[in-house]
Image 1 (spheres, rainbow, N blue to C red):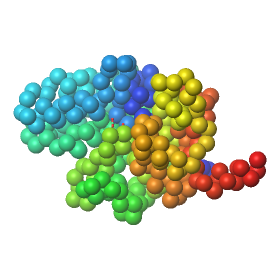
Image 2 (cartoon, rainbow, N blue to C red):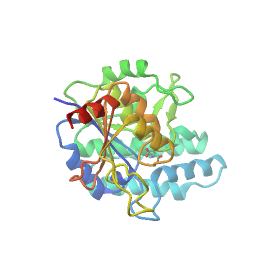
Image 3 (cartoon, rainbow, N blue to C red):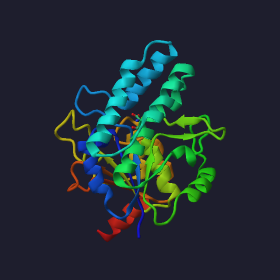
Image 4 (tube, rainbow, N blue to C red):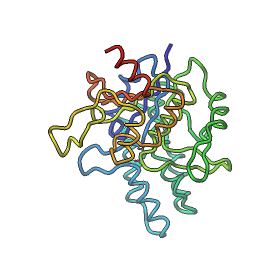
Length: 287
Ligand code: ASP
């Protein structure tokens, strides 16, 4: 059986309503690894959990009261778990976060808690095993992933017939400190997991139908691209296309893993497929 890694962005996890779409998608047998972001915006002027965590950190570092953003975060997760019917007690988790904020605020640790809590709830909801990426994702202080060391730890954690939910966006240094990627970095987690699992496909589920040749918010003439190469995707992501973090590509290209950018809320659209140059040449030959 093929193995797919399916990563869901913040808008796909914003509330229980969106997470029920994820449940449907994750029920496909190949989708053995689900990688999750922190809950994003539910509506236009809503706040992303990661932004609220940054606010907590900023306030705590200045010794200011952080209870307002902290309580918003807590309420959001409790609401998601309750609405999904997931029986989980997050008191110890929130206690640990508060302790860090009160006594020694650590930016990477605080930021990572969005994905961490998200993955705990979603793993329970989907009846899958939760994996904290700090158990296998070894990163340098500069944020580079050590694939060799990560692979050894990853192989010890997963079995061939297991189904997993992995928190995106962070790993740890060799010393054991939590380390986050840059913003949007859950995309990178998904690509690294695809590489370590030697997956056939990395599906990146988002809230648009794929990659467009122009910003559809600015022009109605923007057209979705059905298939493109790693290089083309990398250049677009580097030059600001928000649909994907550019640092994903190297982990996919080295193992020739197809990337499929798709819309969680529009499954009839196949999205954009990103593959190696050779694959496209073969298709062109076939006509
Ligand atoms: N939650 C993080 C962010 O908002 C990472 C991610 O969503 O990929 O940037």
